[in-house]
Length: 98
Length: 194
Image (cartoon, rainbow over all chains, first blue to last red):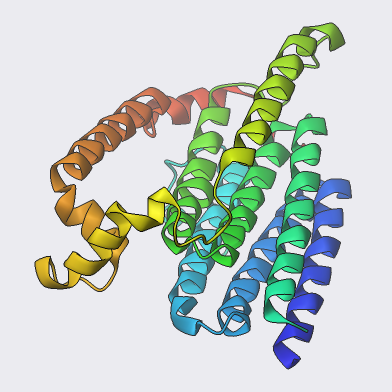
């Protein structure tokens, strides 16, 4: 029962994020909303296994978290440097190193 | 709440969200937002595959759809402009008609399909049951799908891997993740604002 309530709450949060993705006035709102949308999907996957009584696929949620992270880094790197070739560390710009 | 109805409700909720995302992708003009939204679309549809118990498909969809293709689309965007040109309304009539006709034909075809989870359907009855029975003795792999893909159809899968590898090489050569794309991106004067 608790898990069902949690799933419903997560779906509500997904809908809120979806609204922000669609409306989001600036690009960064959208990046943030898409990233958060991915995180909610990861949580939803983690819950789904327990909801359906087969928590064997929890590692899928871990894979999703990794992919979501890579996609967000790629998007932000594209916004900042307009290229994937630049290594984040060698750049002399006063950015925080990742 | 019954678990079956719960899963069905979840199906409906995810499908509605996918529909809204697809509408948003169609209406959006900024290519950047479209790439990000298609990444979110793949993640959500992969979650839907998990709800449908198709975990292998979900794995592939997450890795290819959300991970690699987002990066590839961004790489392709380096070589083109950042906004989609608005098309004339009447130009999209023919694709719309094709989509509607194909969709209705596909929906018509689902009438003939056996019901979901039918044990007596042709896909489950003869060959499937045979594989399920003999995998344990032939190959000691717990996952039957993996056993069929990697062992029974091993040469076929090897061919697929070669095709995918060739395609990857071609895409990397075309997009040029190297000096060329860097100098090309330095020539465009606009900054990171959209």
